Amino acid sequence: MAPQLAWLGLGNMGRGMSKNLVEKGNLDKPLIVFNRTEQRSLDLQKSLPDGKIKVASSIAEAVENSDIIFICLGDDAAVNGAVDQALKGNAKGKIFVDCSTVHPDTTEGLAMKIIPAGAEFVACPVFGAPAMADNGQLVCVLAGPAAAIEKVEPYTKGVIGRAIINFSGQDVGKATLLKIIGNTFIINMIETLSEGHVLAEKSGLGNENLHQFIAIMFPGPYTAYSTRMTTGDYFKREEPLFAVDLARKDAGHAMDLAEKAGMRMKALEVANAHLKEVKEHMGERGDISSIYGAVRKEAGSKFEN
Image 1 (tube, rainbow, N blue to C red):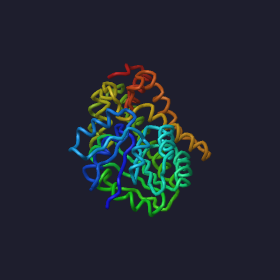
Image 2 (image 1 turned 45 degrees about the horizontal axis):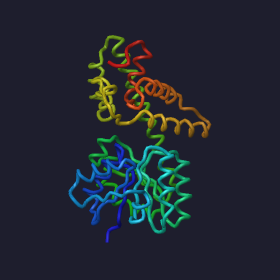
Image 3 (image 1 turned 30 degrees about the vertical axis):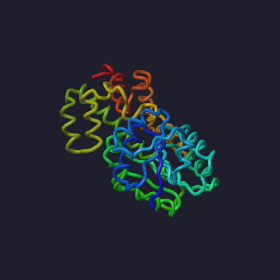
Image 4 (image 1 turned 90 degrees about the vertical axis):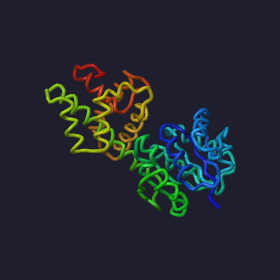
């Protein structure tokens, strides 16, 4: 008999991941979902066939009736709070799978709380944008005990993701260490694109000419973010795809790791300063792609193009 699954957290990523878990995970029981704002759980329930989602009124209720609990929350404090709530009940024999982007020290700390409670823990951060989560095209990074990963893996490749990076048997912190370092590539990519587009405009090359080059040479994320910049999506969007506060959290984690390793990530420091400007200009509406607006403003142009 298939295990009972639960999902905690229905943000931009969690909605798509949980939907794919229902549609492709071969579940023989409803997926139990909990979100702090219950309306998100009810909206997900309405979007899927009857009987596929059971809405829990608390974390304790979701965990009590589940065998494998997936967590996808915005920051370290939220993840720690959710796990603390979950462990107030009987967690023995359960598997907790954290898909959140948190500091590796947080991941290791979660294992130190979960394992003594008689449960197992798998770190499973994911790479990809919300659209990739919707389409089941994420890349999942799995770390933890081999036996636990074997039970979780059927819900990753071909379900919530298109591929996995398997750190089976390695410390759980290795997964989030890769995730944090990997996210610096994304932040620095957007910084590079932003500077390139501002220079293209100011030098007379033109944004469309640069975009043609990007689309041919760097199809995929580079082209997608270039499009968001040239179309003005970076400032028009009411709800960010990758919120500025989350991007700054990831940058902060990466710079902390670098400092502890005896080095600096100078390119990231520049991007982080622009993210600070984005927050001041746009507030919570700010998106990681809004770095473009900050670079424009720094160069004497208007934030909005």
